[in-house]
Image (cartoon, rainbow, N blue to C red; front, side, top):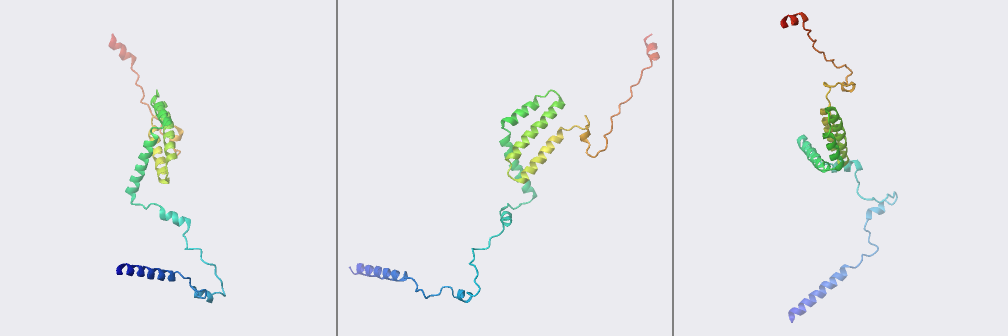
Length: 186
């Protein structure tokens, strides 16, 4: 019973101390003494910490470069993901089938140009980073440049430097001597 009395008295003592600790400070207590000295030149209270500019925040949250090889690999992985998403698109598949059904080489090259336009346009619409869009443009240019055949059928747009392309020369056809031919048959 002594233990219970001790526990109850300790609990009452703790409760009394807690109640006394919750009393408010008297109104004459000055919490900010330096404000009284500066009352001659009032300054507006600060709104919070100084925040950096929006451009600085954007720069801080941009992913850091891990090196040229790592950046190239990252763009390649993003490109493969886009390729997998767009290859099953109905319009892209229809353009590819249409290009493969061409009868002549020239017709196939023209249809493939249209296919690459559609294909890379879809991928560019889904691209999220400017680096990826630049890489897609480079890949499209490379694919379409393989379709050009300036030596087979030169066109005025094939020579950007303005110099004329050499004209093909044919070998002269040798004429057979009729007299020799007649003598052989007799």
